[in-house]
Amino acid sequence: MNKNNFPKLHNATWPGIVGKGDGSEPLISFDTMLQKTAAAEVDGVKFDGIDLGLFDYHVNIDGSDDYIKKFVDKVGNLDLEIGSLVAPIWAPTGGPAMGSKDERNRFVESVRKASKFGKKLRDMGIRTANVIRIDSASDVDSWCENPVENSKLIVQTFREACDVAADFGERLAAEGEICWGGMQSWRIMLETLEAVDKPNMGFQADMAHTLLYLQGYNSPEDRVLPKDFQWDDRAELDKALKMLTDKLRPWTIDFHVAQNDGTVFGSGAHDKTGRHCLANDPNGKLDIAHDAGFWLRDNDGKLTKATRHICWDGCMFPNQVMEQQQTWNNILSKMIEVREAHGWYEA
Image (cartoon, rainbow, N blue to C red):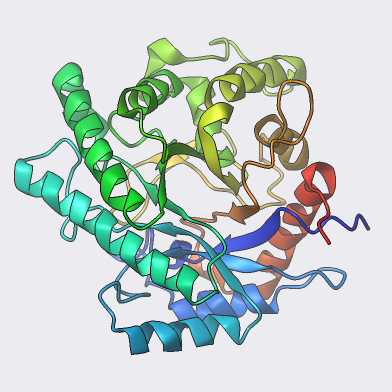
């Protein structure tokens, strides 16, 4: 087995919440997500850490220093580190980045709280990254009612959020997902990033979501793959992935390994977006280890090393699937393949 030890391999905790509840399946506790992650093992290799969603059911973002210390001990006692965070920028704690002044203020305040929490985790030595994931918390249909003005508001809110994050030494990664207004295509996402124009603003690439950028969901004019594209045309898919990653890779500071079957899916309160599939799903359209290279290597094939950890995001998997330990072993196995193909060693 390849002895690469970077990038570190993380599992996301928020799939225990995202797409759950609201008439869907029950939420899964943080302890369960943590235990499944810690128990996963493939040929002696284990997950190095978790990426953490700062959502009430899992984490008290307003918790005292004593609460945070106990939280850190719980994670650290399982030999796991903490990497990127997700700020709770949606209502009711937050609000649309293109919404009313009060909603935009709540958005920025949520980022401030997440940044403060994140810095404390770094100061305690358990957190290895300084990236916080955000999106516009705005739906595509509402954005389309006035694209120019709504994008201006999103950019203004993101700029304010960048400023408060910078006070704590944090960077913000805008999630490339088709369900967020002002971010629903590669072109619109790029325009948003360029307009924000802050040194601590970057892009969060998730392989399951960015695949949908190629198909033009929610923005047909920005479709990259031909309308008559057939999934067995690997050369055409590689060409499209290269075009997409050439545009967004320079902005990428956070990376999610994932699989997608070329369809959209939503559950609970989550809008339809790129369907996350199991790592070994026979209907998956991505060659995960190969396609991760478009994001992790530059045009000359050299490793960018822009992300020192990579994360698996398995949002909206059925609970029955998530509660099986083999699910996480299969995911870890695929993550190891990515590191073997695009990783490096540090003593």
